[in-house]
Length: 255
Length: 375
Image (cartoon, rainbow over all chains, first blue to last red; front, side, top):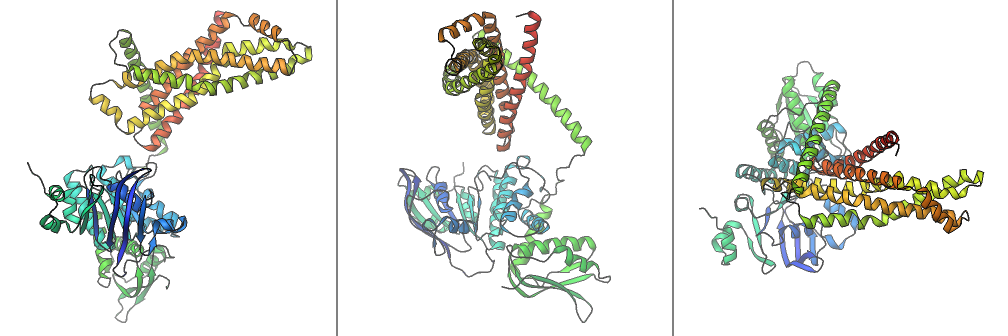
């Protein structure tokens, strides 16, 4: 389990990774490194394979080829038990929050703590109370996921993802389906959590405001060439990148 | 790695401080909050506590959770917690949590008392009954519109459902019905052997299968197979807002989704029952010929003489009613499904339970009516 005070280094290294389903390759030869403590954004238009890439990194889909390193461990080259060990060091917020509908918000956040720690039920309650307060959901402990709004569900999903103090937080389209106000609140929350929990965030999104608000570094995926066509700080990319596809994507449009 | 500890200490100037030491990690053993707070409360003149983290090792949110609760409890007891000795990161974490406390204050969902739960259950039952009557009414109107040629029912969907309810159910219906025939023949033979009247196996199996058993067995198979599938399919469509999409386009979900399913099952059920009767008689025939040495031609003739056309009509009426029950319970529960994964499971279970209970009740009613009408 992570201690929150560790040295700076690269947490994830993706090397020549090709991802896809069975025979069809969606992205090929993707390589990048994610520095510790940064918000790393995977961006690109709809259908470019952002979520598939994320699912390959978090161990849900096996890669067609290439490697994903967590520290020194090659995730797809180690045994299932070691893989589970690595999986416990990260938290994931899924696109639809994926809260368990038969459990209350409190029970959703408490489940990983019950499974993987020896804390007493009272101590678990304390940790859950802190995590829910961190995402601004104090008072909603006894509510079921269907009883709260989409934005709250996403925040509850984040509270569950950070339940075990992960080293890395994966966010799949965190602002999708939210109104601008809630989307910006979620961006602020991601920023604050990165700051106070010293967690590295890997975020998949095509929300421009999010990219500029929280992204330290981005990679841009292209559906046509099925590869990564740019990487760097989003503001610098907008200023310096010559590729029209990237510029078109990153230029805000106002009618 | 040293164990997490927290001790209350009195300084020389008689002020109090909490010494936090060791490694506070979520996966390790942590001190109990209650014990610590009891010690604090047992000091009569304590109004300020300073936090001393000089011997704190590694920490994570487990320490933050402890201090977060401590800060709330101290506030409640009028004790001032001086948090200036905390590491910068921990302070930030606590500040964010405290700001979250005030962001949204909402009364938690209230727990109901027994009386309230009972009242709620009665209210929900009445609401469910009303919804069921609405459903039946709407289905009848849709069917009437279909007869008048004004309903929009996708024909292709109807034929796909016919195939699903009919052809695809044949292997299961064959197996179960054949075995029911075999069981009936064995049970009958045990008694008839005592009188040397084995030939009446043909009568018992033939009448039982054609009059009621064929229809009941087919209905039970179909409620588990097709009724459950209707409920799950429509329930998932409810979850995915597909039914809302139909409604907002002005397309009646009843005509588009429910009608083809109900009609397909009502049409196929009597046919499946006839087939089930045949398979049941075949089961009895195999037992009679192979196990009890009956003459094949005699068995066939006996069956023909015993099974009057009346029995067949009674069986068909059963099957028609059962078809309606299975299809309506599956579709009704599917359409009323709650919009979550657990809701789909609940709808499926309820559809099967509702169908099987109704089948048994309907059988009792039809049997009584047949007795009254001397059929």
